[in-house]
Structures are given as structure tokens and as C-alpha cells.
Length: 217
Image 1 (cartoon, one colour):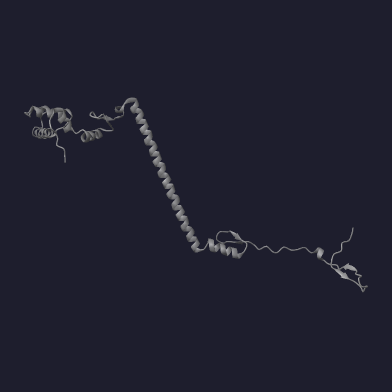
Image 2 (tube, helix red, strand yellow; image 1 turned 60 degrees about the vertical axis):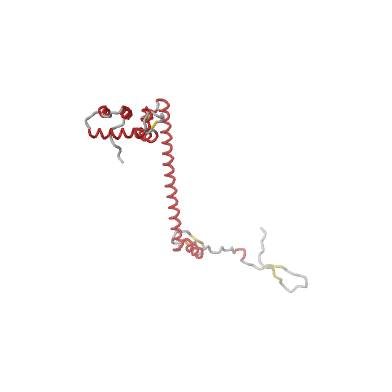
């Protein structure tokens, strides 16, 4: 096994010029090993537990993340985001209810249309106007339509060939007669009129289910 010389070269002896003897001095460099610099312990944040390599890094973190102003700003931001989230959820719930109501209405319209096509409008409780053929969901709606679109005085005036004023005058007088003779039948009230035209007007009114009463103002 060959010996390995380590160390620094040195000139030995008093030799003639140009003659150099190289040798080595013993050294312990072969046995020395480099040592790593000490690693600093991580510094934990007392507020959140996050660790930092240096106290300066921890100080910057606490200044940015845990100062009073930063915490207040974050709280306000969280409250704003929470309010927005709740508003979005409420809006979504309202839209869902609106869509559900719309679907129900469409389903009901489809069902009623199918029933009308199969059995006719009267089978689902609709009432028809005898004058124009329009259908209405209730008798009250039909009556309102007839009063507005087909007023009774105009209808009777056309039937008997009298004026609207004549029809209204006969009806007003008939109501007064009925108040004075509450026990008499409608036919008896009719016979209290001497004019044939007045009687025809009153009979036409009664044929349209008119009742002996004054309309309240």
C-alpha cells in the first residue's frame, strides 16, 4: 500500500543552486472535517403558531397579520363577505321560490286547458256570458263583465225598443212600488203599471233576473 504524503512542501539543506529537495511536513488536515454552521431554531408565532426562521420574520408577520388595525380590517372584510354570502343565498332562495311558483302555474294552466279541451269550460266551474260567449272563473266576475260590457238597461232597451232612460225610470218606479207593497209578487207589481210599454220593460228586466232593490251609492 503506497503512502500518501500530505502537507506543505519545504526546501531542506544547503544545496547547490537549482537543486531543490521537496519534502512534506506532517499535518492533521486529513483528519479534520468541516463543521456546518448552527441552524437557528424556528421561532413560533404566539398568536397563530406559524413558525419563522428569524425573529425579524416573526415581527413582520405579527405586524401584518395580528396588529389591531389589521385584525379590525380583516373582521370588517369577513363581515362584508358574510353579508354578501347571506344576500346571495337569500336571492337564490327567492329565485327558487319564484321558479317553483311559475312551474306550478304553468302546470295548472296546462291541466285546466286539458280539462277544457276534454270536457268543456263549464265542467271546471267556469261561467259563460250569454251575450258574447266569454268564459269567467266565477259568477261575480261574469256579473261585473255584464255590467261593464253588456249593461242591463241597454240590453232591455234594445229588446223592447225603448230608451235607456225609459228603462231606468220604469225600474226605479217598480222598486218604489215594491217597497210600498212588500207582500206582492213581481207579477202583481207589473200589473200596477198602466202602460203596456212599461209592463214590457219590467217583464224584460225580471226575465234577466233583476231584483227589486235600489243600488247603494
